[in-house]
Length: 461
Image 1: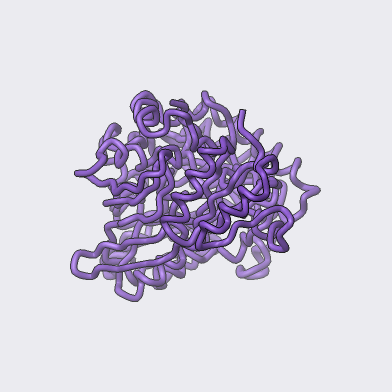
Image 2 (image 1 turned 90 degrees about the vertical axis):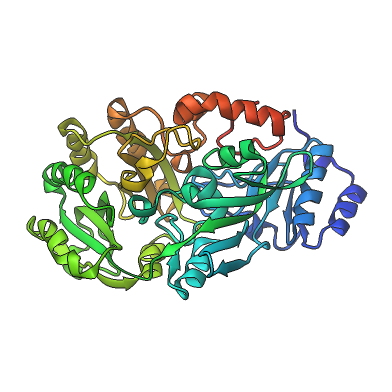
């Protein structure tokens, strides 16, 4: 049983605060309620204290305090996690938002990033030098959470998952030690953090391999939702057999009133959002089969890579109601696409949607034991997302997600991308790591035998 921070003597908390370069935010602080909020407005948790860390020493001090006083610890980077796993009730939140830097080494195209950075900060710095790191689809996402869970995004087919481009990390362990992990040092830890989530320590910096990416061709194509079965069958072959230079996630969605033309507003569509990073002269021939399907809207053109990464940020500001469910899929059979027609035709709110992200191409050519990401043979990471600004619609969007998931889970590969999961229990975590789970448990037992870091998709020692 963990202690509540509220039961710790004020003089002890004062001493803790005095040791931090950053601030310790307690419930009576004027900034407490704004600081405890996370991206998902459905999450309403009240931590006993929030340590706003600005240095590695702050993180060490906070980890030692939480361990020594037996309080629950949550680690918050960008605060984007759907299940609210960057926050906790009564315990200590170690907030990394003050640990930010982006150092680009142009000689070897590597980038060192702080544990508190979000991706748009990284994208802007690398873009100026004609580089990019494979990340996700929303640029306000935190670097730490996305990376530690795997990292699926627009560059996955060309350059792999985010973890496939992680070269090194610096982290604070459960015993307070500060270590550097890479292919030569703490190799077991380096393996575990490339997909094993926040189970193994607090990562204060990441070093990535970047790639030459500057101007891409990107944007959406739309077809009426009634055509989803036809488009999905075509897409399943087209994207899997196509060049790694072309990526595109397929979705069922409603078009909001901005920034799309009026004739699309509030109508349901099957959408594909494209990203092409190859030879511009080869694009027209490569993309012609898409246009031959007569989309009702196609806006795929040259744009800076960060423009695509941030294209949907404005649609999803912090504080909305979110509910997620997810699965991996090996293919898109007629039985699967029929369910996408059914539930895509019944989307309950304008911002609720389903996405299927390809994890083929470069990501599929990494061994299934080379990182904890066990589903290298799966073709898609699927997610059903209920979103709405109104708390009164929380039940509506949650039920739609659960029903969508329940209809498709029997056709799935069994597990899910951990960054798309809510708090769904140990069996679900184990299924998502499959044959790599026992190895993760063993490493957890070495570095965090008391399960200090448990507010996550938890791997119990």
